[in-house]
Image (cartoon, helix red, strand yellow):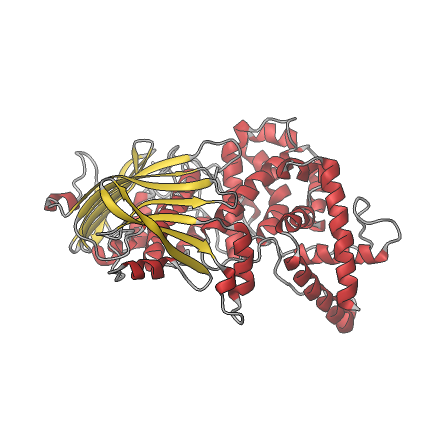
Length: 363
Length: 193
């Protein structure tokens, strides 16, 4: 941090000669003056390497509030790769991380479900930029059991990420701006990335409420409805900082949360405990995020071939042993195609030239 | 804030935000200048709204990616570029705040850090105590007031730049900030006396 002289003044805020106010302003200044880390900004329309923020996210679990959410975060991190998004840039891949993580955190099945097939739409009016339209994406999932499922995450008619798992085999694939990329490997490595098939045991309404609530957040049954001809529990999850244990260090944080967070309403299928609809409200009761299952079949027999990915003619399936390798494959990074003029950013990120770059695309 | 202002002041002397925005639409290195100019302010603002430095760093990257993507839609003259940028930062932080569960930071209340040791250990200890009190006072403030302080002191924005972000007039923002300072000063005096 740069040191600055002590004769700081705030003529717009502090009356001349008011030493107390001046000291207060100076202290506020100190309080908010967090050390700024070296953050090289990289933007490459078709880069050959993951950006640094993606690598950081990939190294650590995102928000493992739910085991499924954490797994999905890893899955989403796979997506933080260039050329996979709606417009073929790292930007949209980053958006995928957010959306996938959010979807997984709030919509993951809570228990061992019977075989099902569902199509869901997500929309978020938490605009990425002022005036931007809400984001709408769809997810299609075929689920037989924890070892056999397939899910595809689509945006703009394109598969932003697909995952298929059939016993010991797993595939990750994407059809980004640079064409279809497919990685195949052991499910022990690639299968850990799924957002479906949670084994968390939820067998009753009480389990559901317990799953959504926590010490500073309450979940209550508001009623029952029917969605898609299926009976559902309507559950309202609301911040409840007053219920926090008084000596819990989270109390104050939860109080802050209560000032900001709106409620979340979840419509949970009575049979499968799958969320069929989720609405997140902001503090003004506006719906800022909505997940809606638009089609669902439960208890159906899904052909085994559904869970085995068959690439179209001409598409090479890259064999991988680890999730990291899979990540490289679907982001277009291979040892053969790596562009030496665009090395990966250094971990210490101290090189000034690591700022905005515009590297050529990988072959 | 001083660091942010210093960076901005130095850069503004070279090219205005609007000129850099226009250039950034053609050349990526011009966006790099905007990035360097606003990185400290954006990071500090987001740091005041996140639970960890890592999260603030990730959000900072995300904000600039969104800014870069949205740059063609920015219309100079409607609002200052800084206001437009921090509206994106604000949206990103609010978004992250909503999704973060169950652990949420004190929104707009910065983490306590050790102040620079200019005046020896005794003065440092006193200053540290004051900052501890001040942080507790901030937590008692209405979030909208804390937000104004974060924009002013963490982001280094002027009242004119804050106004379009929060949807108020410049005069109203200035008045409110002055009142907040006055209120805090009273609390501050009581706490420390």
